[in-house]
Amino acid sequence: MPVSAWLALIPLGIAVTALHATWNGRLSRGVGLGASGVLIVSAMVAASQSLGAGRGINWILIAVSIAAAIALWLGRTRKPRKFHMERHAEPATEWPDWPVRWLMAGPLAGLAAVAMGAAAAALSPFASGTNVMAGLFVVLIVWAVAAVWVAGTSRRLRTTGILTATILVGSGGSAAHFLL
Image 1 (tube, one colour):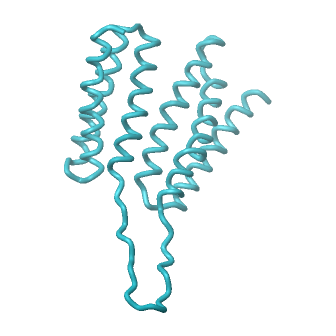
Image 2 (image 1 turned 90 degrees about the horizontal axis):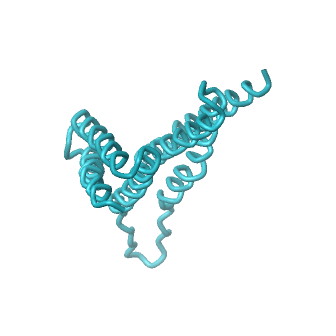
Image 3 (image 1 turned 30 degrees about the vertical axis):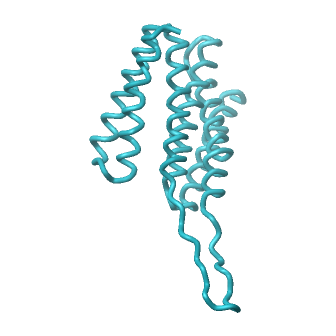
């Protein structure tokens, strides 16, 4: 792999750091999201120039997903455990929050992404091979965005409702295309 492809990871690392700083409140929302978006697009352009359009963009999308997962893992906070001094006190009934977040960010966001990718592949005006690739790119992008959104929000019911509606709309769009 050429050195220029590895150099494309520098703006990608800065972009993930800016997103993490925005998430923690150390950077304003507009500046953090705008700068990270520009840096991710520049990393895609640099990687596609050195590796080719298909390989470069795929390589950067995979690197963004891995970097976002690492940033989420390192940025998580742990709640302090509650210790009771009395001997017969009731145990704390608080369940950990991370299993619900990861289950929603993984399978539920993945189903929403696959449904939207199938709808994009079915409804895209491209040739038969190109529309499948467009659907796969939609799956990658929607899953990454949905997973980061689910892991970062605390409103579980609203998140579940929006992801379920996304699954229904995506499945309905692709089914309507094949049935009509």
